Image (cartoon, rainbow, N blue to C red):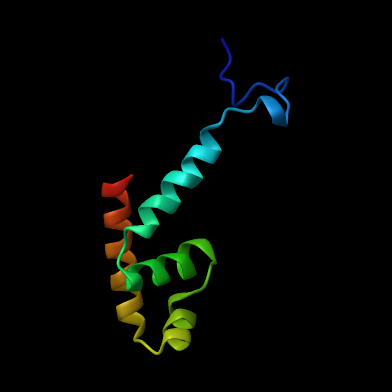
Length: 80
């Protein structure tokens, strides 16, 4: 039996609802992060900024950006 995700006969309206659920879960988990973690996580993992760009935008050190991203990812794993 083929997996529903890999079944080419499914159209967009029949796609499993997991994508919407995943977005809601990620959004809910992000809202539970401290503000600094939220900013770094969103800028790096969602928007695609580099640590150097984030450091310049927020007036922080590159190491701070990396550290907060690491901590944000750890917390997100626990929340999800």
